[in-house]
Image (cartoon, rainbow, N blue to C red; front, side):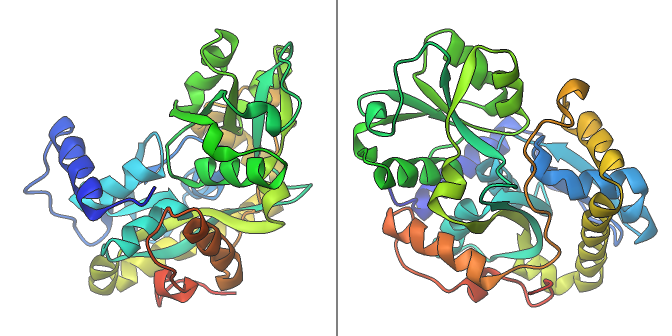
Length: 320
């Protein structure tokens, strides 16, 4: 299903009507509003906040937790947010539809095996054992037509099922477990820390780690802004990039502190801190890793045309 510009704009109107309009909002040189998700993938930002890296770079950021990348994209489009976190699929869709969004900093990457941060879960008593068994069933994703939805479809098709015979519905990550256990869903495609929280209770089991099965390594999401804004605010953008990179370095240097930050910022249960699957926290953006998901997005017709990864990377972004 290709996302049209009209679809984007209609959702933006709804989003703006539901939130306080900031028509006279003026961003001072060191102040801004940042949209993010309460998931472990945003740990570099959590660490940057905890360690004071943004402040030391001269930035004062208001951080706003939101439901998903698609909603954050709408916030950046409306001007309510200046920098946002998004899954790469939502970014590709916006770019193809004419929005001038560019990635400015990496966020997290999925790595097969050791760095799996996503799972498809079913109840422990479910008869579902394979991708084929999902045909005719209802599967939850946090947002339709985003990376969670794309990878679920790709995994099903790769493993003997037919994704076009599966009913996908939108359910926020925090609500998936209850809906699954309540019998409203047959399976959920769910991210950390919610995946481990559900399995630790003993009522759900992992059907698959679909992301690593589909692609060995890829960028899940990253930080982005409007190219027009980036060009007008390069020093501020570069300060943000440095702070995020320092946050990623801090995760490597002090894993215990990073997990404490996840407990605080993502609402993670302390008992799960050492059990959850963590992604790779990159400090550079890889064209190769982006191109693999661009090609898959085009294959599943979630974008109307193929693009090159370099088109969605800002000239100020760290590349590797």
